[in-house]
Structure formats: structure tokens, C-alpha cells
Length: 191
Image (tube, rainbow, N blue to C red; front, side):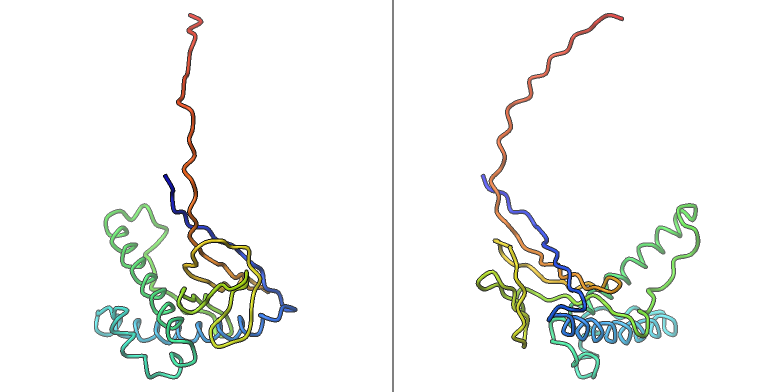
């Protein structure tokens, strides 16, 4: 019997790498969209006590400049990430109301990213492809050498200090390991 498992390959991109400018540009644009969408959500929540969900926000922002600065699927993934952060906030509020001793204080609304900071950029398997052991990115000729031998799920570019980490998430089929039955004996020393 075969089992399908998820695996991640991480590749570090430093300032000397040819992929650095692309990573920097895409993560900066993702941060701008994240902050703009978070501003809209926060204002609606503070003023009208309503939570704008992903689908409505996606429709609202489709024609906005910050949305158009990213490939459509990366923009959608950025909005989904923000929506997950808001869900976590509401779950934390629910727990806080039940038992305040679990928390140091009242949970805060999801914060903005730093003005000159970066945010995670998530590519889907429809955008990135693997050909001849190289990962290709959308609308560029840039390639990244990889060792993966499975079905590509997604690619994440994560800013970490002065480097970017490209995480390639993939599924791999592995054979189930047959372990011998456990035969255990015990001796009672009667102490």
C-alpha cells in the first residue's frame, strides 16, 4: 500500500542570487496588498462591526492598483492569508471570552506589515512548473534548480531578514513500511 505525504524543499536566496530582485519585488507588492486589504477590513470592523470575507474583498479589490501589481493568483493567496489571520483573531476572541487566564491580555486585530517590510508570496501549482529539475516562475525566464520528484502543490517565497527562503511544497508517494509485529516479553523481578 502506498501513502501520499507532503514534503517541503527549502532554498535560500541571498542578495547575490539572480532571483533576488524578483523575490524582493513580489514580496513588497504582496505586503502592499496585504496592508491595503487589512485597512479595509479593519475600518469595516471598527466602524460597522462587520467582517468582510475573502470573496467580497477579492471582488472589491480586483480593479485596484495594489491587486494588479501582482499576478492574480498571488493576489488571491495574499487575501486568503489575511482572511486566515482574521479567523484566528475571532477564534482567539472566543477563547478569551471563555477563559481569560489563558491569555496575557485581550487579543488584538491583525496588524499591518511594516511600511518598508515584505510579506509572504504564495504561488499555486498552476503558476509555477517543474521542468528538467528546474522550477519556473510565471511571466519570467528565471529558473531555480530543485531536487523534488513529486507533484508540485505550491511555492512560497518567505522573507527572513536579509534572505528569502523559497519553499517548494510537493506531494510524494512512498511505500508503507512493513514493521515486524511487536513481541515483547517482561520479567517480574519481584522486588
